[in-house]
Image (cartoon, rainbow, N blue to C red; front, side):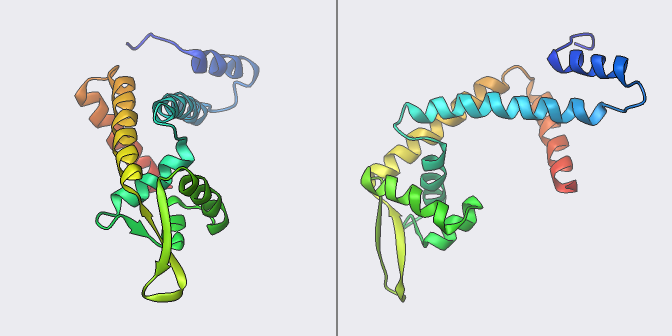
Length: 163
């Protein structure tokens, strides 16, 4: 595998020819990460689309599903779990409520607050979409041996924690 090249290698070769003074190792690492993220994201998005939702909707459904019984959160907690503004969350909730996947109700502990919960249909879609997305991601990762996948996970974790 050591002599297999890709499009990133060709780009780095061009930079080496034009600017041999530059160390392009980081460009190679992050160029590959960006391309992998795009390819994996697109494949996962197609898996979600088969269940009638996009990534934005999946993020909300998944946050509610991961919350456990009773599968509900405040809009603020949802926004925080998705690293979004509450305004961005509201538009997603409107779409999901219209589709019957979530319901909003008054928060019994806060007269001004509301809670968002998964409907039974939303619960089903969340479970099916997460399984489909994971199956697609596992298919993409099958190029690596389990040992290689573990090494990659560790390296990416180290890199991410260092940032």
